Structure formats: C-alpha cells, structure tokens
Image (cartoon, rainbow, N blue to C red):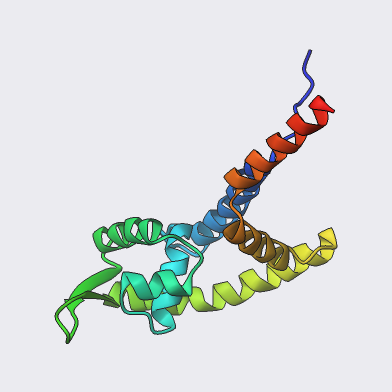
Length: 161
C-alpha cells in the first residue's frame, strides 16, 4: 500500500520553495558564491535605499522577525555592518565592501532570475507571482486560521442538516 496523500497548500508551498531554493543555491555555487538565498530580500532592499530593519521589512513581504534573523546572519558573514543613525534612536545598516561586491555580482543574476520566472509562468500557463501576491493579500485580509474555523463551521452545519 503505497498511495500518496493529496498534499495540502502548506506542503506544496514548502516543496516549491525548496525546489526554487535548491536551484538558486546550485546557481550561486556555479557563480563561485557562498550565498544564502534568504539574503536576497535584504540585499535588494538595501540596494534600493533601505537603511533599517523596519525599512527592509516595509520593502519586503517578510516579517520583521525573519528580517532580523537574516540580518544577524549577514552581520556574522561580514556582508552588513551597523552604524548609528543621526537621530540616535535607531541603528542603521549598510553593506560592507564584501556586501557591495556581492550586490554588484548578484544584480545581473536577479534579472536572469525574473526572466526564468517568466519562462516558468509561460510553461505552466499561470502568472505565478501574481497568484502568490493575490493569495498573500487574501490571507492578510482573512488569516488561514479564521478560514479553517469558517470551513469547520460550514461542515458542521451541513452535517446537522
């Protein structure tokens, strides 16, 4: 008995994420880089002018906690450094020389990445980035936990009828 169970949304999202990260990591190795894909949103935000964890969070779809964890790793890897902001209330972040060199090497790769995404979207016949964006926005309006409660309530009501 070896029949697969139909995967749920979370399982499929994790699997697709793993496949994307695996391909990205292969490409980074081919480029001779020791680089973690999770650094990308932080590097892109800093390259676009972000200066604090809050700025990075606003420019990405990640939580402040996830950004803070990634920033900690990037500080340890020597990609980022901290500096005091003029108002003295917050600490700023900036790319080190290593970080600037990394950003310069990765920017052309990110253009290629979006080209590969367009090719994937053409192959599957769906605008994946738009679908995921729309899904994230719908879940921000009404969380999945609330949706589960509603579905359970509807099922209970249907069984009682």
